[in-house]
Image (cartoon, rainbow, N blue to C red; front, top):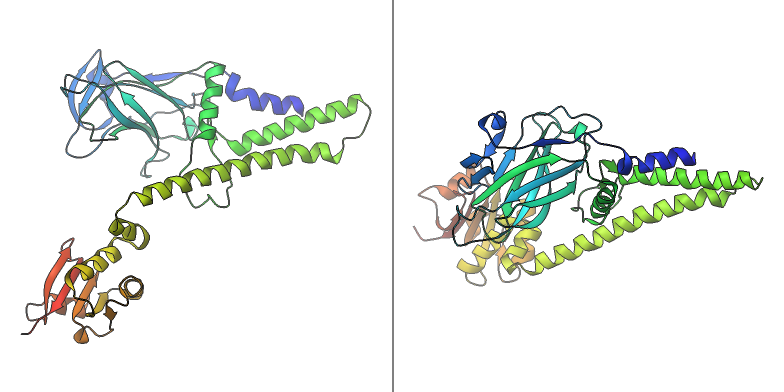
Length: 366
């Protein structure tokens, strides 16, 4: 058992991988690739791309039939083409690894921060899923401080790094914060390290320790104790639970810092939704204290009670729009909404957003 566990645990760090690479230097290398950018140049130096509109620069490779021994490590080589953007010699960016697991499925991504310079920059990261599960692979480069107008993509590869570098990548994957998701509270899977789930690696670790304890007990001609079986399981539980708690604490701190940097209106939009925040701010800005208002919506229960909380006691909500000084239409439809937009309506439009998806009307004398 100890030999089985050790061999399985050491496999991602010791087994040889079959490297793969994509070097965009000719038109033939771009066949089948989806490029979301303007192609500025293509030569032996790589593929130079310029931002098209306001969309981030991205390249999606054509489908590749990965095999089981394909390295679960992505290496991206990039450079900042200063001749395309004069006056800048560096650019802080986020490099996102994009992947799709089956045709038609939404792309997922994992990102790393770096600083591009005219000299080539290489970024290595452990892939979140084994390559054999990936249908299409790509990369997206996004400016951190300001939009990235141009980038030179030199090479994408899945290399065969030495054991020491694999250990470094495994540690990097382990300590990297994972975004909060539905599984974050009752954590079940943990991070993926070199194409393998943390829980699988811990199971192999447990088998190794129990096997070593069993071999030690057999050498001393003694039975294997219960503690020797339970201790490795407790260690594995401590690692998983400690990692999940550490991850939640870091993400909570990040969420707190981001929330604190928002304006009061942005904070309300973050908490209650953009429509509720907009309606509350529009009432505060246009209505005098003591005014009454009614909410017209496809499902008025939630917006009406949220606005009760945000606007009372300065403003009072009434159910019947005909009795209100103001009417707030929020993603509404039906006769009441059409009546609010009618030119003969007793309400005049004082604020609107998104082509009347959100509308605030004020009662006027006709």
